[in-house]
Length: 77
Image 1 (cartoon, rainbow, N blue to C red):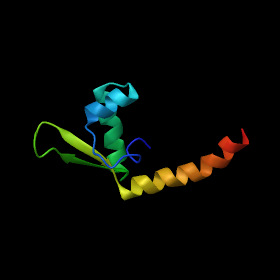
Image 2 (cartoon, rainbow, N blue to C red):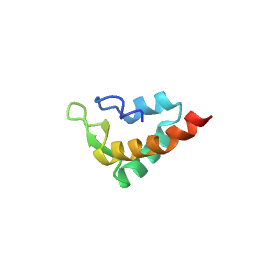
Image 3 (spheres, helix red, strand yellow):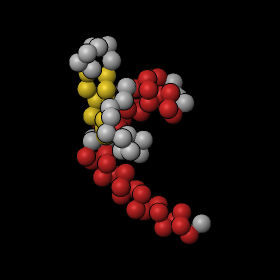
Image 4 (cartoon, one colour):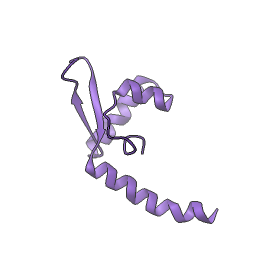
């Protein structure tokens, strides 16, 4: 959801700060999301030490499907 609300790519360190988790925890989570096809991770062409993360079309579709399921439950509460 965080990446779906912006078109900008983020680094794993930026995402870790946003979610208040360690960089290692974020790297682990991003690896799982990439394996599931929900995010794209690419090298930063300006700084080869960094990577950039963006939501994939499949990730955006999964987010939209989850929101459709949960919206009626939240509305009922």
